[in-house]
Image (cartoon, rainbow, N blue to C red; front, side):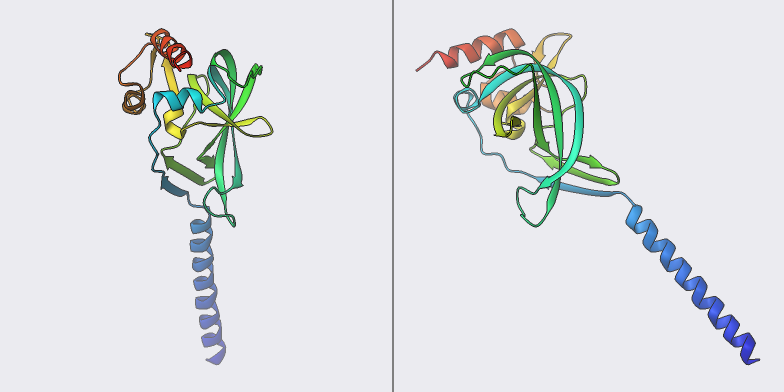
Length: 194
């Protein structure tokens, strides 16, 4: 009788430990999604032009995510996305940059089962044609000046700037919706206005 009880109790313990191990394993491998919100200090159209190292038109060729030191906590790493952009044209270039291709880093992205979404940061998609105000971060890796205020998609069908989500931000800076041609003229006007 003692032997049967010992085997029964051992079996219950083994099954319990197995269930706990399966639960912990599933928890460790389940998707982790973190959301952050950045409050943006509004920039003006003049700041957009004068405070960026360059304003470029280009096409996103590839994206690469990695973990970088956190902007907010030095003991932590954030997921970042590096967008490789093939430059079509410099609209403004006060630093006389001559890159044909640049890497622009934005906070947020996905690695494995971890996703970091940052409201207020810029996002990029492969194949997307964009206009971006850039700032040199380090070693010719750039950031978007003004975060979400400094990057806009270009609609190739009608040559307008800004997606539905980006338009309110764009209009808050420039006052109205614009085509790429109108935008380039506006940037030229700002550059030449003392």
